[in-house]
Length: 160
Ligand SMILES: [Zn+2]
Image (tube, rainbow, N blue to C red; front, side):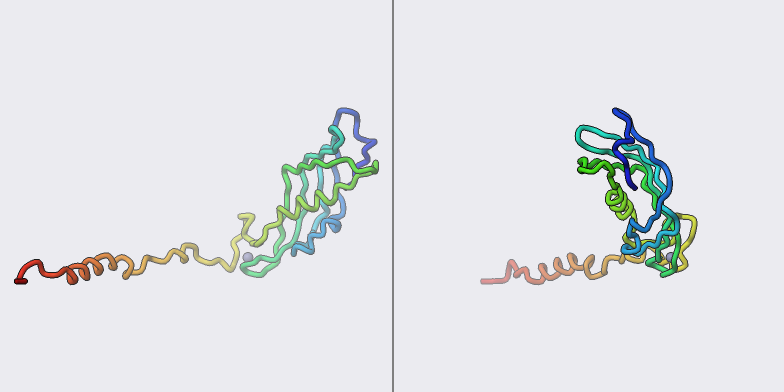
């Protein structure tokens, strides 16, 4: 995604909207295969010595579910994409590195096919199995220690 600074009107923002090849996002390196172009709708403006952009990014990717190991598709959406950068020397500014970083941060580290809520993962594990009951010994221990203490108590009478 490239911006011609000369196209940004003075004191206003330039609206950029469209699609472009998702390959430069290098999503494959993160285990996600883009199945759509990158859609963008951003407003770009100039502030004191810098460039800012805000808007929405979206790209559809195919990932592999960590649970059932089946491929599934999900749309990665950045509803509040925002960047601010210092102006580089050139008139044509490439926003791709910032866009790439933003999308990568939105990729789930452990993708699950049921994350979207419209599908049930076939490899569904029961929840709550991790809560193990407290062992019996732990609860019984204080009573045992009390009994031991009583045994150790020397008799208070009978000595000459
Ligand atoms: Zn799954």
